[in-house]
Amino acid sequence: MKRRISSYIVLAAFVVFIICTCSVFFSLHSSMEEGNIEKEDYQTDPDSLKVYTSIMVKNIRRYNLEDGTYKVSFYLTFMWDKDQRDHPAAGDVNMWEIMNGEIDLDSGGIVPIMENASVDGELNEGPDGSYLANHYLVHALLNNRVNLRKYPFDMQTVSIRIENTYWGKDHVEYLPDEGMSEVFDDAYVHGYFIGNIEDHTSTTEYTAWGEYSRYNLDIVIVHESSLFYKTLLPAIMLFLVSFLVHFINPQDLESRLTLIFTIILGSISHHLSVSGLLPPTGYMHIFDAVVVNSYVTISIVLLWSIVVNYNMRKDMKKGKYINDNYTNWVIVALLVNATVVHLSFLF
Image (cartoon, rainbow, N blue to C red):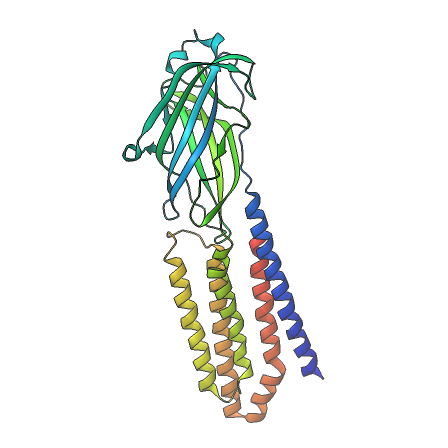
């Protein structure tokens, strides 16, 4: 009767593990699609030249997960009120630089399309009326920080950050022309889909030069869901297969060890093949945690098989009692531990 109850508990533990694991990974994938971008609470300077800025991204190429570099081609537009044409900084609006990379001269560098051109109309932000505008086609090689803590459910950010070369925040401010920045439909990042796109202004403070206004365009890119099936799913399948050892006669230790070592070699091979695609990090990401937990589980299954077999060889009755009364509880403990590890990914 006790053995039947423990068998039902094992079955329940498997069901709970599968439900929780599926729920966790679905939740991580859903939050990944949202891709929220943090923005600074920016305060404008009343005496500065307000330059309304927008970027239309033409293409994103060669995103390198190893060092966070990527190539971007984009149209950059500056617009400022004609009434501020006599502002001390008005003649230096075109003296801007990219702060998170460099101009890609091999791809064409900066191509001026128009400079100080008169434009009549209205901006989404700022006063209505007549404006002066600069418009460029820019090819740049940029970089951003890579965060792989939630790999393969990680979100990376493709950013373009622009500041004026000479004038600080008190003279020139690059403000978003709300709703005008976009990514063209033809732009594609291999292995990713494009999520949220937001532009905003932030303040950068330099010890020697003071505060500068920085225009930021942030584009969230997210791994395609197929990456889950190539990384986590095989690791979880190997973890679950390790429990099949308990269907082999405990006295047949050789068959048990053969299956266990095959699973260990498969797990190590898969771990190395995936890790080889990622840069070295000083922290453990989700894929690492799943695989390490799998190593621990397989090791305990191995040790338990040896313990049961040893006791059966020494005293068949005692060994059979240990196998019949404790093996199911060991399985439950391992499944509960794996469930807790997977739930921890949400925090």
